[in-house]
Image 1 (spheres, one colour):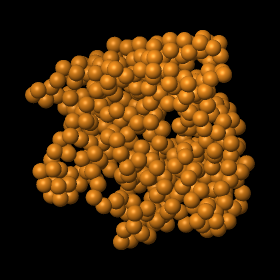
Image 2 (cartoon, helix red, strand yellow):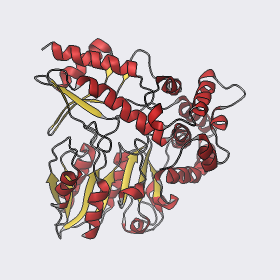
Image 3 (cartoon, one colour):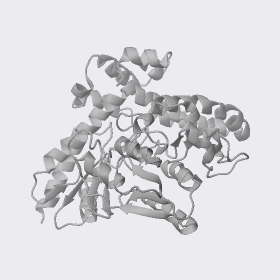
Image 4 (cartoon, one colour):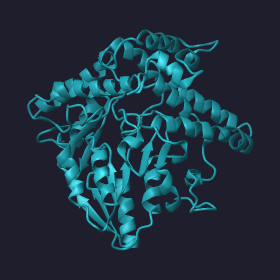
Length: 432
């Protein structure tokens, strides 16, 4: 685990520092305050800072979230901090000064440095990272690009994301592959149970296993490496849906032992809406067909997966500022804060009569995402009550055997916001 105090931050990023990142001749008050806060916390542990509302107040000031709404659906899409918004707007304005020149000859030159920075964050080679628009595009590149034939088997679960399920079903319909479905009982604090559900489904016909790193419905963290190691022992490839895990809690892609990984960057990295990442292990690139065809579909160059055509360079390039913001706060601080916030509200509601929580409170099995339900009520009823009476925006979940309202705070969320959430849930439960 890397130490993200100010000294290591400077060593890692050279010319980049909290001061360089935030300072300018007209530096606004919010950035000056955040700069001082980050520097003053350099000798305090991430665990100690997790519940320090004064520290996180200045992080909150870096965002432009509406004061008229408590936004608790960051798992759907997160707002970007001001520094990212400003970069995107600057690049957008530049693009419109002469689109084909500034987009293709100027902004596109930032793609390789961005690829390198994303690779550092992911802990892999920059020759294994391709920029995408979201996790669905990244994962469907793999799903539709794999060389599978009729009778080949794919192991996946009913709790996976609908876009991925539908993509696999389309391959089943088109190519005659066989989908082997698992139905997980969640939440679980038993990694052996979770891993064995997959492992017991493997056989000589299994070609790939699809694993959702963190189940989006309830925040369950899956034991990906345990499943991946067992799969590779049997010659099975591993595809990981990391839409909700990347920049959420600490890991590197190689830690997972997967062959393919896709994620959205507009969730927990807080990059601009419409940004994503695809990882393909170097030796796997040549045998994976791109979703958007290029001149050399059998090339071993990761860039063959970026043949999208004209695209919003101004959105993509602003991702660099999202990485800087993430690194300045520090991944350990962020993870501890997110876990603290989830446990803060869930611990307060779990003993309220009729209230049921569907997410683990233990480290390693969950982080920011939590789901709650009230006996005798539909998730949509609680969801509507939260918004209509308290202007709390969460999302009702009705999917397979998971039912409830999913709550996903972020680093700008305050405990006062969550106190109101607790009050609302308690009031709803008592209404009967």
